[in-house]
Image 1 (cartoon, helix red, strand yellow):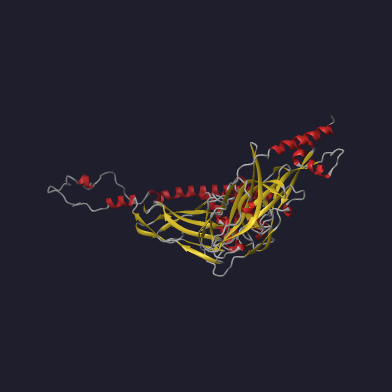
Image 2 (cartoon, one colour; image 1 turned 45 degrees about the vertical axis):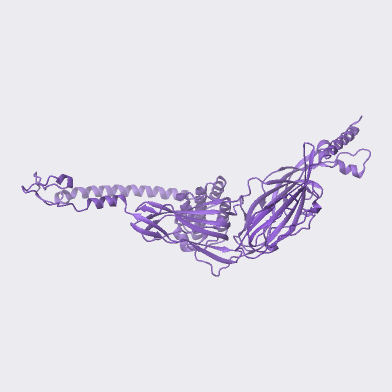
Length: 619
């Protein structure tokens, strides 16, 4: 028997084994799920109905008053466990609410439990344009696979696809995004990195730690699909385009010889990945797969009616505040806490808190963000500010305000907390001094004999006594008398001469060193340090090196020394609210309070620094 006949026999045996694996099927079952289960009016959710071993033609979208169901995709998954083969078909519907309320969506089949969708008011607007649509195919008819051939790379082995909440947004507005990476089984050897954005017009929050993994059948081919959840924000206005790319390693196969038969059907049969891995030779190649462009209209934030304390926050927020203690003593610190919760771009949420409050001393606040989802889209940001009362009595801390832009109403909103009462008692040392200065009963009374009373020691009083001893002819101190004035004058002149001579030597040496080894104004070495600090997550070193890089760059532009580029100089030339002034301030605050930065913070501040350094000039 030759090698060719052996291959044919092995192929037939494999077909026989594969055919026996599908002889047994699992019982039918229908499940459904909705994600997210709580949304705002104007947003959309996704209802997924999965039918395992059932007739999918009988699955129809539910009918619920106040909700609209739009089919956006269908996928199929086949699993075989212990000889039991399960074929699951999933149909996904976009759920669009028309009004706020709590909706119960009945089960798609008998015995399937219902799901509940909660729609909160206040988001404004509704309709498919604000729903969760696919970037490439906004709406797909039932029974059509959403990831078609147009999403694939050239050899059909992989695809990258975006699911976006909407395509019109404001600068700084955060929207949820799902990134799908599909890899054809047997053709993709490995995933070499996480999906990344192309370009700097958008920022992407940290991807979910573990992607969701599903097995789908697309165009009749088995695919493994990995889905990451994140949030996306635009950093500048305009008509923009976005793509996401992922590095992969794919197997490039060579087709084995079909033998003397050469039929087209057998030719395609032997090109199947299972037989290619067993019989054929293959090589691996690293490629990058990119998604189709998703187009956006990014609107600039309006300048009309913009609050003075607006810091760039965009989303839906609520504000509350409290004190760590309602009672304190003069000089003891209490902590003022302000909590901002909701949905939106929390990287742009900041608050000045309190400053210049009468009878109070305030310090720089610190911030901490606790996300309630894996995307960082929902959560609570807490600001804590130490304050110290300077006077006793019943006092109150003034309200704290926070302003943001609401993209659903297209208007600015502002929240003001209530004043916080606090009872301030005198400091312990003040109470002690007051007790000592309290008048004593009959402090000057004497006994009939003229001596001090018996309880004088207890009252802290004792009789005056004249201390006799050696006297002095003059009350003038020695160092003011003429015969001693010459000595300190001579010593002062000698010390001054030595100090002046030493300073001349040091200055001459410093001038020589500075002339021969003048420091470079090139900011690139500091930019490298800044990038290393960014990788290590060292926010203190990041801001220090960023400020030093800007000092060198501005020194060359303004014809000053780097040491002369201070916060006061920057505020005078560029404005106290400029980005450079904010960075200088944050560099000092981070060294004091240890501010923690997110990946998005590092990216935005680096873009700011590089933008100023690459600018042609700066007044």
